[in-house]
Image (cartoon, rainbow, N blue to C red; front, side, top):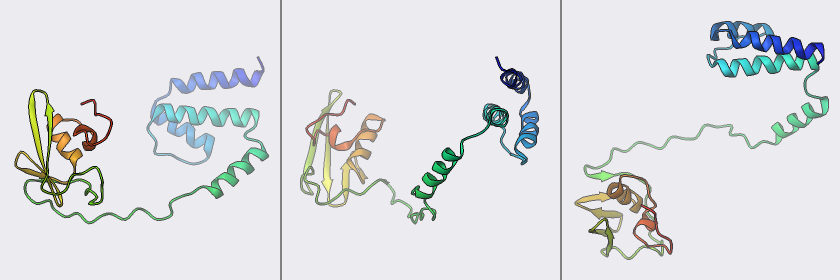
Length: 168
């Protein structure tokens, strides 16, 4: 083995015995800047990579140019997403996504969706702006399915309004 590979292996072995504080100090020595990271494995990998790059050479100029080119072309978000205003829910209402009135899978408002589930018959009334089940109003069929099963399930699949069935 070449000498520099042996030296790097010894240094990595020494790094593995260090505490997070000692690794942060070593990081500052190797990179020339401090870090607040406390993840030992992350620190160890970063320091080991830097030591190897210093001993054997880093990325080629071609690779660095390509990375810079990809970074320029990346579709980066320059503005944080806007937060939606938080409207408190009406008592007895479970919030979720609103259903589309033009969804062809839904029967018209006032209809009852029926399904047998675990020995009982479930009945859900389709409302103009949601669904009523067991005296509560839900915004989506998925919210009703979750209330019934206790786990998330696509409401259209659970109530068999699609050609496929949900395995709930």
